[in-house]
Image 1 (cartoon, one colour):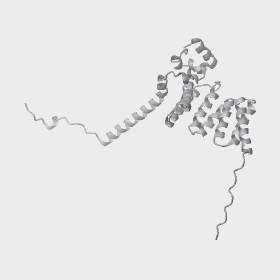
Image 2 (image 1 turned 135 degrees about the vertical axis):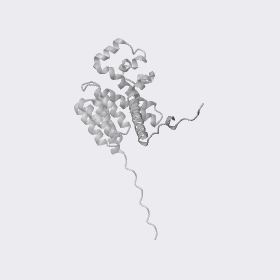
Image 3 (image 1 turned 30 degrees about the vertical axis):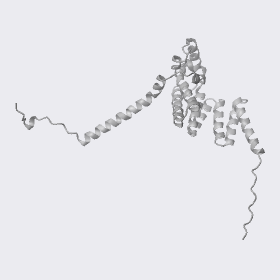
Image 4 (image 1 turned 180 degrees about the vertical axis):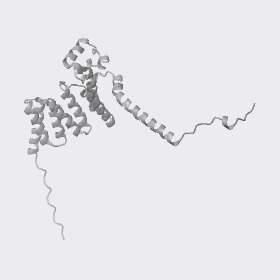
Length: 248
Protein backbone atom coordinates (compact mmCIF):
# COMPACT_ATOMS: atom_id res chain seq x y z
CA UNK A 1 0.00 0.00 0.00
CA UNK A 2 1.41 3.37 -0.99
CA UNK A 3 1.83 5.80 1.85
CA UNK A 4 2.66 8.75 -0.35
CA UNK A 5 -0.04 11.17 -1.47
CA UNK A 6 0.35 14.16 -3.70
CA UNK A 7 0.35 17.43 -1.85
CA UNK A 8 -2.87 18.40 -3.63
CA UNK A 9 -4.69 15.47 -1.98
CA UNK A 10 -3.48 16.13 1.56
CA UNK A 11 -6.17 17.47 3.95
CA UNK A 12 -4.94 20.52 5.74
CA UNK A 13 -6.47 22.09 8.90
CA UNK A 14 -7.97 25.46 8.16
CA UNK A 15 -6.10 28.30 9.78
CA UNK A 16 -8.02 30.68 12.04
CA UNK A 17 -7.32 34.29 11.19
CA UNK A 18 -6.94 36.97 13.84
CA UNK A 19 -10.10 38.74 12.65
CA UNK A 20 -12.08 35.51 12.90
CA UNK A 21 -10.83 34.90 16.43
CA UNK A 22 -11.91 38.40 17.42
CA UNK A 23 -15.34 37.71 15.96
CA UNK A 24 -15.63 34.55 18.04
CA UNK A 25 -14.59 36.40 21.21
CA UNK A 26 -17.13 39.16 20.60
CA UNK A 27 -19.89 36.61 19.99
CA UNK A 28 -18.99 34.75 23.15
CA UNK A 29 -19.08 38.01 25.15
CA UNK A 30 -22.54 38.83 23.79
CA UNK A 31 -23.78 35.38 24.79
CA UNK A 32 -22.38 35.81 28.30
CA UNK A 33 -24.13 39.17 28.66
CA UNK A 34 -27.37 37.67 27.35
CA UNK A 35 -27.11 34.73 29.77
CA UNK A 36 -26.50 37.07 32.71
CA UNK A 37 -29.57 39.13 31.77
CA UNK A 38 -31.73 36.02 31.53
CA UNK A 39 -30.55 34.82 34.94
CA UNK A 40 -31.37 38.22 36.45
CA UNK A 41 -34.88 38.09 35.01
CA UNK A 42 -35.40 34.56 36.27
CA UNK A 43 -34.15 35.33 39.79
CA UNK A 44 -37.63 36.16 41.19
CA UNK A 45 -39.00 32.96 39.67
CA UNK A 46 -36.19 30.99 41.27
CA UNK A 47 -36.99 32.62 44.60
CA UNK A 48 -40.62 31.53 44.22
CA UNK A 49 -39.57 27.99 43.38
CA UNK A 50 -37.46 27.92 46.58
CA UNK A 51 -40.30 29.23 48.80
CA UNK A 52 -40.41 27.35 52.08
CA UNK A 53 -42.81 27.54 54.98
CA UNK A 54 -41.52 29.06 58.19
CA UNK A 55 -44.26 29.82 60.76
CA UNK A 56 -42.23 32.69 62.24
CA UNK A 57 -42.04 34.47 58.89
CA UNK A 58 -45.68 33.87 57.99
CA UNK A 59 -46.78 35.27 61.36
CA UNK A 60 -45.04 38.56 60.53
CA UNK A 61 -46.86 38.98 57.20
CA UNK A 62 -50.35 40.40 56.50
CA UNK A 63 -53.04 37.74 56.84
CA UNK A 64 -53.87 37.78 53.11
CA UNK A 65 -50.36 36.63 52.17
CA UNK A 66 -51.15 32.98 52.90
CA UNK A 67 -53.84 33.12 50.19
CA UNK A 68 -51.59 34.56 47.48
CA UNK A 69 -49.87 32.56 44.77
CA UNK A 70 -46.81 30.57 45.90
CA UNK A 71 -47.72 30.99 49.59
CA UNK A 72 -51.02 29.18 49.32
CA UNK A 73 -49.24 26.03 48.16
CA UNK A 74 -47.01 25.78 51.23
CA UNK A 75 -48.88 27.51 54.07
CA UNK A 76 -51.54 25.40 55.81
CA UNK A 77 -55.01 26.67 54.96
CA UNK A 78 -53.75 28.81 52.11
CA UNK A 79 -55.81 27.06 49.46
CA UNK A 80 -59.09 28.18 51.03
CA UNK A 81 -61.04 29.05 47.88
CA UNK A 82 -63.51 31.33 49.69
CA UNK A 83 -60.70 33.43 51.19
CA UNK A 84 -58.88 33.62 47.87
CA UNK A 85 -62.01 34.90 46.19
CA UNK A 86 -62.70 37.35 49.01
CA UNK A 87 -59.25 38.93 48.79
CA UNK A 88 -59.37 38.95 45.02
CA UNK A 89 -62.67 40.84 45.16
CA UNK A 90 -61.18 43.28 47.67
CA UNK A 91 -57.94 44.03 45.78
CA UNK A 92 -59.03 43.39 42.21
CA UNK A 93 -56.79 41.93 39.54
CA UNK A 94 -53.64 43.11 41.32
CA UNK A 95 -54.13 40.36 43.91
CA UNK A 96 -52.61 37.95 41.40
CA UNK A 97 -49.29 39.80 41.88
CA UNK A 98 -49.44 40.30 45.64
CA UNK A 99 -47.30 37.27 46.47
CA UNK A 100 -44.39 39.41 45.26
CA UNK A 101 -45.24 42.06 47.85
CA UNK A 102 -45.39 39.34 50.50
CA UNK A 103 -42.02 37.99 49.34
CA UNK A 104 -40.65 41.52 49.61
CA UNK A 105 -41.96 41.88 53.15
CA UNK A 106 -40.47 38.51 54.05
CA UNK A 107 -37.09 39.62 52.69
CA UNK A 108 -37.15 42.94 54.58
CA UNK A 109 -38.12 41.10 57.78
CA UNK A 110 -35.24 38.70 57.24
CA UNK A 111 -32.88 41.66 56.90
CA UNK A 112 -34.19 43.18 60.13
CA UNK A 113 -34.51 40.10 62.33
CA UNK A 114 -32.77 37.05 60.87
CA UNK A 115 -29.70 38.18 58.92
CA UNK A 116 -26.46 37.42 60.73
CA UNK A 117 -24.09 39.24 58.40
CA UNK A 118 -24.03 42.57 56.62
CA UNK A 119 -23.81 40.76 53.29
CA UNK A 120 -26.95 38.73 53.99
CA UNK A 121 -28.77 41.83 55.24
CA UNK A 122 -27.85 43.77 52.10
CA UNK A 123 -28.93 40.85 49.91
CA UNK A 124 -32.34 40.58 51.57
CA UNK A 125 -32.98 44.31 51.32
CA UNK A 126 -32.11 44.18 47.62
CA UNK A 127 -34.51 41.27 47.14
CA UNK A 128 -37.27 43.22 48.91
CA UNK A 129 -36.86 46.21 46.59
CA UNK A 130 -37.04 43.99 43.50
CA UNK A 131 -40.21 42.32 44.77
CA UNK A 132 -41.85 45.63 45.68
CA UNK A 133 -40.99 47.01 42.24
CA UNK A 134 -42.68 44.02 40.61
CA UNK A 135 -46.03 45.02 42.10
CA UNK A 136 -45.49 48.78 41.73
CA UNK A 137 -44.89 48.36 38.00
CA UNK A 138 -48.08 46.32 37.53
CA UNK A 139 -50.55 47.91 39.92
CA UNK A 140 -52.98 50.55 38.63
CA UNK A 141 -52.50 54.10 39.97
CA UNK A 142 -55.62 53.79 42.14
CA UNK A 143 -54.58 50.54 43.82
CA UNK A 144 -55.35 51.00 47.51
CA UNK A 145 -52.11 49.44 48.80
CA UNK A 146 -49.79 51.33 46.45
CA UNK A 147 -48.82 54.01 49.04
CA UNK A 148 -48.00 51.26 51.52
CA UNK A 149 -45.83 49.37 49.03
CA UNK A 150 -44.00 52.57 48.07
CA UNK A 151 -43.36 53.30 51.75
CA UNK A 152 -42.00 49.80 52.37
CA UNK A 153 -39.69 50.19 49.38
CA UNK A 154 -38.52 53.52 50.79
CA UNK A 155 -37.73 51.88 54.13
CA UNK A 156 -35.52 49.29 52.41
CA UNK A 157 -33.76 51.99 50.39
CA UNK A 158 -33.05 54.03 53.52
CA UNK A 159 -31.64 50.96 55.27
CA UNK A 160 -29.31 50.52 52.29
CA UNK A 161 -28.05 54.11 52.73
CA UNK A 162 -29.96 55.20 49.62
CA UNK A 163 -32.04 57.79 51.45
CA UNK A 164 -32.34 60.11 48.45
CA UNK A 165 -34.14 57.41 46.48
CA UNK A 166 -36.23 56.58 49.52
CA UNK A 167 -37.44 60.18 49.83
CA UNK A 168 -38.63 60.04 46.21
CA UNK A 169 -40.75 56.98 46.96
CA UNK A 170 -42.20 58.53 50.12
CA UNK A 171 -43.16 61.72 48.31
CA UNK A 172 -44.82 59.62 45.60
CA UNK A 173 -46.79 57.76 48.27
CA UNK A 174 -47.93 61.11 49.69
CA UNK A 175 -48.81 62.39 46.21
CA UNK A 176 -51.06 59.37 45.66
CA UNK A 177 -52.62 59.50 49.13
CA UNK A 178 -51.99 62.77 50.93
CA UNK A 179 -53.32 61.50 54.26
CA UNK A 180 -51.26 58.27 54.36
CA UNK A 181 -49.64 58.64 57.81
CA UNK A 182 -46.88 56.03 57.57
CA UNK A 183 -45.16 57.90 54.74
CA UNK A 184 -44.88 60.99 56.98
CA UNK A 185 -43.79 58.84 59.93
CA UNK A 186 -41.04 57.16 57.89
CA UNK A 187 -39.83 60.52 56.61
CA UNK A 188 -39.73 61.89 60.17
CA UNK A 189 -37.95 58.79 61.52
CA UNK A 190 -35.19 59.21 58.96
CA UNK A 191 -34.56 62.86 59.82
CA UNK A 192 -34.65 62.09 63.54
CA UNK A 193 -32.08 59.31 63.06
CA UNK A 194 -29.62 61.65 61.33
CA UNK A 195 -30.15 64.35 63.95
CA UNK A 196 -32.23 66.81 61.91
CA UNK A 197 -34.98 67.20 64.50
CA UNK A 198 -36.48 70.33 62.95
CA UNK A 199 -37.19 68.50 59.69
CA UNK A 200 -38.45 65.48 61.63
CA UNK A 201 -40.98 67.71 63.36
CA UNK A 202 -41.95 69.45 60.12
CA UNK A 203 -42.94 66.17 58.47
CA UNK A 204 -44.96 65.10 61.49
CA UNK A 205 -46.83 68.40 61.45
CA UNK A 206 -47.43 68.06 57.71
CA UNK A 207 -48.92 64.64 58.28
CA UNK A 208 -51.10 65.81 61.16
CA UNK A 209 -52.39 68.70 59.06
CA UNK A 210 -54.03 66.22 56.68
CA UNK A 211 -54.54 63.32 59.08
CA UNK A 212 -55.22 64.92 62.48
CA UNK A 213 -55.20 62.78 65.63
CA UNK A 214 -53.32 59.97 63.88
CA UNK A 215 -51.79 57.93 66.68
CA UNK A 216 -48.46 57.03 65.01
CA UNK A 217 -47.81 60.70 64.24
CA UNK A 218 -48.95 61.99 67.65
CA UNK A 219 -46.70 59.49 69.43
CA UNK A 220 -43.67 60.53 67.40
CA UNK A 221 -44.36 64.21 67.99
CA UNK A 222 -44.64 63.60 71.73
CA UNK A 223 -41.32 61.74 71.65
CA UNK A 224 -39.67 64.71 69.91
CA UNK A 225 -41.18 67.10 72.48
CA UNK A 226 -39.86 64.93 75.29
CA UNK A 227 -36.42 64.90 73.70
CA UNK A 228 -36.51 68.67 73.40
CA UNK A 229 -37.53 69.09 77.04
CA UNK A 230 -34.65 66.88 78.17
CA UNK A 231 -32.22 69.01 76.24
CA UNK A 232 -33.58 72.14 77.97
CA UNK A 233 -33.40 70.70 81.49
CA UNK A 234 -30.11 68.84 81.20
CA UNK A 235 -27.37 70.61 83.14
CA UNK A 236 -24.55 72.18 81.24
CA UNK A 237 -21.30 70.26 81.47
CA UNK A 238 -19.04 71.56 84.22
CA UNK A 239 -16.31 73.81 83.00
CA UNK A 240 -12.77 72.83 83.75
CA UNK A 241 -10.95 75.28 86.04
CA UNK A 242 -8.46 77.48 84.32
CA UNK A 243 -4.96 76.16 84.48
CA UNK A 244 -2.62 77.93 86.89
CA UNK A 245 -0.04 80.13 85.20
CA UNK A 246 3.26 78.42 84.71
CA UNK A 247 6.04 79.95 86.80
CA UNK A 248 8.58 81.84 84.79
